[in-house]
Each structure stands twice: as structure tokens, then as C-alpha cells.
Length: 181
Figure 1 (cartoon, rainbow, N blue to C red):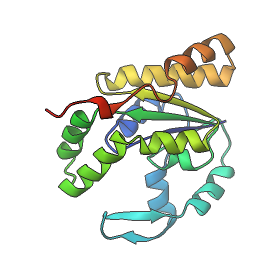
Figure 2: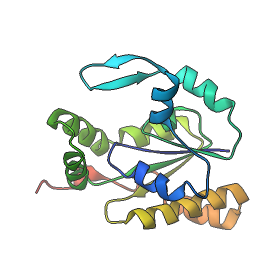
Figure 3: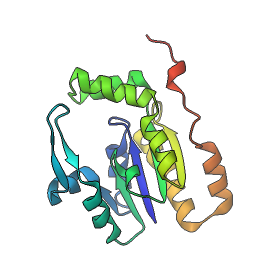
Figure 4: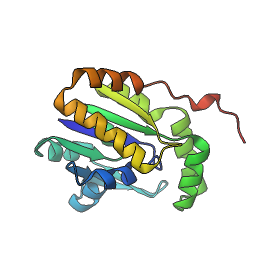
């Protein structure tokens, strides 16, 4: 079984996965892309590598499961289950500023978050999608919820799966209704 932990940069994917790594086999897609050379070039405008998704998919297909893949592209790699982390635009702006992102990259990522870009892609591409709001949750709380989801899915605990799928059903978060500070 392949799980994707995805979301706009700054929503908490890496932080949460650090807490999950003792329990699950986690692959940091950005690290694999760099280490294995799974990229086709450099996006000079965004200052990032252009991932070779076909080569990355071939690599993942050879890896035994259950497996958790982490990265903002993970939902594009045919996971069985995608867990999309979301964060309010104001908090996301603060996090990305603290990480040292340039204004243009902050704006691009905040707009993508407001417009549900990753969530929409995940819903279109993945058979099961959970949507978690990390805005007011600690990393530990978020990791606990993700553990609960992954364990319920692996054990095929139908009552718990049904409850979690309803609780974290895609589409319940709407940043467009927020007013600017």
C-alpha cells in the first residue's frame, strides 16, 4: 500500500514525517530526486529541480510496501491513499517567510493553497483522499492523526476508516471565505 503525504510547501509534511519515520518506511521525494538524479533540468524562475516523474514512479514501483512518500508531488505518483495537509494562508505566509522563501515564491504557494491546487489534483488522481488542516494543530497532533489514518487503512478497520474518511473528507476547508488581515 502506498500512502502520499502531500500539500503546499510549508504545510508541515517534513516535520510530521520526522515524527512518523520510526513507525513507517518514509521516502522523502525531494531527497530521492536529488540523490538519484530523477530530474530533467532546473526551473530557474522557481529555483528548483524539474522532477522526472516517470523515473520516480519506476523507482517507487520497485519498493516494497507499505510505504509513505512525502513531498508536494507525492499525490502525482499513483498512491493508494493521499493525505493532503492544508494551512491557512496567513499562517502559511508566516511559515514560508520564516523559511526564507522569496516574496514571489510565497505568493505563488499561498495562491495555490487558497485555490486548493494540490487537493484538486489529489482528488482527481487518487482513489482515497484525506484533507487535514494543520493551521492550529501541533506537529505531534498532526502526526497522531496521520498514524491513526494509516493504521486504520492498513488494518482495513472499516468502522474507523469510515469515521476518519468522513471527518477528513476533501472539500471541508475553504480559505477563500477568509478576509484579509
